[in-house]
Image (cartoon, rainbow, N blue to C red):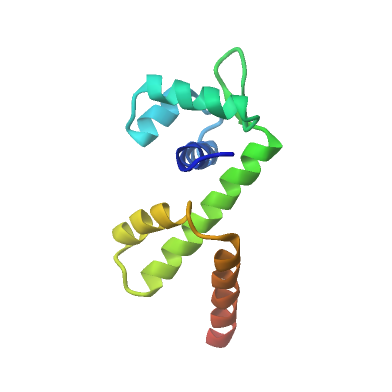
Length: 125
C-alpha cells in the first residue's frame, strides 16, 4: 500500500517528467524542498513497492503500477484545484487544499465530482 507521502513523490516524478527528459533524486529534492537523503529513502520504498525503477545512472522511471498511481493523484489534484478555484478559492489556497484532499477522497466521491463537473460543462455550452 502506498501512503500519502509515496503518492506525493510519484506525483512529483510525473510532473517533473513532463518538463525534463530525465528525472533524478536531486530533481525531486529540489522540487519538493527536502533533503536528498529523505528522497533516497522514499525512492527505496517506492522501488520496493514496484512503483519505480532506478537505473545505474540514477534515472527514475515508472513501472505500470507507479504511473497509474501518479496519474490518478495528479488528475485528482488538477480537478480539485479547478473545482475549488471555480468556487472562488484563490488559486494558491485551492492548490494547497487540493493537495491535502487528493490523498483522502474516496474513488466514489471523486467519480461523482467528475460526473458533476461534466454535467456543468455541458450546461454552459
